[in-house]
Image (cartoon, rainbow, N blue to C red; front, side, top):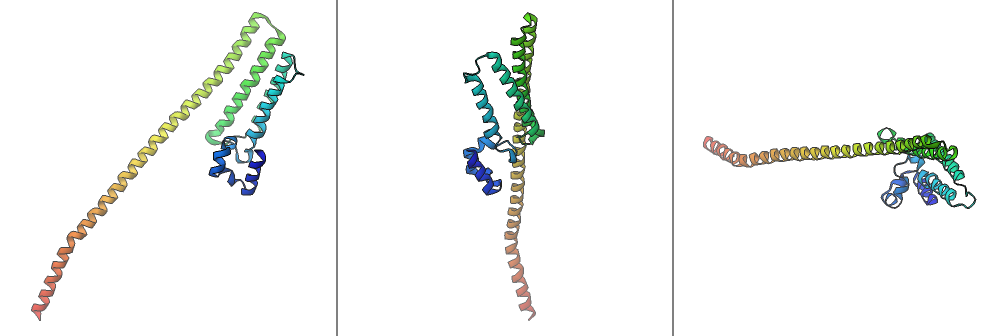
Amino acid sequence: LFRKLRKINRESGGDGMYQTHVVRNYGYFFLGFEPNRWWWEIMVKRLDILLVSLIQFLPVLTDFKAKLIMYSFLGGMMWTMNALVKPYDDRQNELLDRVENKALRTRFLTFCLVQVLLVFNGGEFMSFLTAGLILYLIVSFNIYIFIHTATQFAMNIKQNEIEKTRKKLFEAKRGIIRGVAEDEDEEEVDDEPKQAKRGLLQLGTKDTAK
């Protein structure tokens, strides 16, 4: 898939990626990213999923604490890479980059807090404090996502209403123009008998003068 999309990108100079048939078949993998970061979902995100699967299922890592350390390291690495590269497009003040950064930060800090909870075993108070921090991270991120989703939904409704209003005004304007044009045509039709009568009178006047 990476080779195929790279070939399309090279042959078309970048514009071919957004052809209708390419977007329909492969748009899931590159839409929403910067044009020069179209490969991020295919290479980086898929690599992240592969490494998580290897950490989970490799028989070498049998200790749960070691797995948590690897999860934390991988989460921190992905968070850093995303913050430095900012692969998503810049619409709405880099909203996608900010959402992804918050998601990766929540993931990294959750693994770190679970690791602290299991490694240090600080008693009941430490357990409640760590669990509260984890709950706060997860709930705050979900509230953040909900607010942006609701805001975007409201903006889409408002935009649709504006478009409908524009269409109505355009139709009304076109109807007014059409009505004026029809009135002018009717006036021209009504003037034709009058002009013909005037022409006959002028001919009769000329014959009388002769």
